[in-house]
Image (cartoon, rainbow, N blue to C red):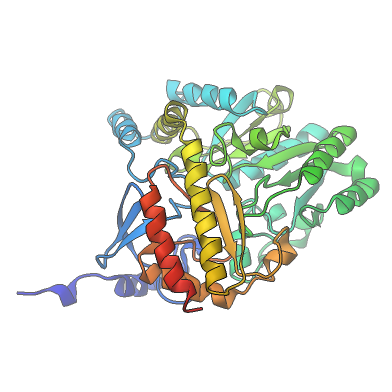
Length: 431
């Protein structure tokens, strides 16, 4: 008997999910709100591929939104997780693995002298902001339009990522008092930064930014902007926070700060740090970090922080990156993809801009260079939606938003990039 008609598929599973989960998804970035249609339900991943429950295979350029720089199911990572599971999942007590991962982070990240593990990037940025305020005794913070730092009340103002994709860069439910001490400036605007410090310098606890943006699409900082940030924060006793949840260990083994040559006071991490498990961290100068309880008075805690399964996954991932050093390969593959996309778009007479740092890349359907929130949101999102579905139909899994970055993994090959570019040429020809 053929029971194909009774097997679950993405359409029926999404309808099922919508009955018990708001919008059918547990994170808005997974929804197809910006592009329309039904998201494919993934059954498994393997290396550079995803497979859905409908029997489709995709070349994956999301990698769980960044963590899988080694590809899906890397043997060393899976083995480490399995070994950790044999001892238990969580103890609510210290384990050696926490120190091992912390020591490796301190070794690899220029700004980090001490680090505290948490469970997500949102927890990391929330904690870093609280720490900066407690350390300085000041309240006001600066963020930049289009930078997304998780769903923290004080930072959910002109945010990127899913908030931008869904057309709600601020959120109901955030009291005005929570954002009263948040100043929002244009990214890459040195003059606006100077003006803000002239007016509020003595009140500014912290400046937080993505040193390589990924949440309004990949947007690259200018050297002048970064140098002004560092010098201005130093001159005013303001804590400079780099949100490297996305760029950390992605654009370079020693994170974006090493590649860009600017060292912040605090750094937030996630994504690759957990190798696919829920992990976040914040770390930085020892004198600042020692203000965190139980040494200092700035309170932060988490029952599952540093749990052995997540620590094992993250430690195996970072150790493998140190061992393999895949960054030259990643640079080459991403450059091949960038050059090929530009050529295909030119051949199809479709205006695009491509921003890339290492293995992070966004192709904006835009006639002008994208340098900030305003230029990013001038992109043609209708054309992007057609591009996305055309690529998905041709077996290439891309971010379902114009305002996200794609990621190349160490398991992609030049041949897979060529296959992707063939699909891109065919799709662009339809636009």
